[in-house]
Image (cartoon, rainbow, N blue to C red):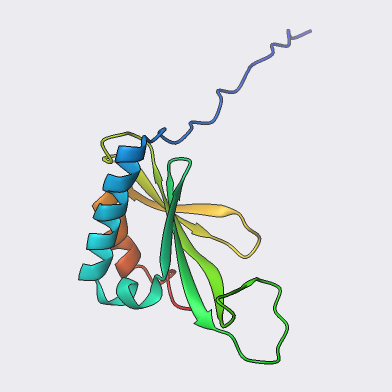
Length: 130
């Protein structure tokens, strides 16, 4: 009879813990890169940094008189998740570009530095205005 062994899977790797100064630096880098790119400048309405990740949001104008499942921002805009970049180190050299599926699961599309991931977001067809 074969012996059975228990094995423990390693814990999933967590994103980098960011200080307030690092978050300010990331926001400046991301905003500067977005301004350089035509598609992202038009599509991305807001960025939010939380738990070692940079979240990108897009907005679409809401039609009057319709009911929506998502909250309406400023009384006239619908806000949708556009994508995210996960930061794995505090030097912003190891990052991953993620896209959210319809079932709220995230797919890692590519890896690179923070600026490389933003450029890949600009050139990837999966990131488009809703």
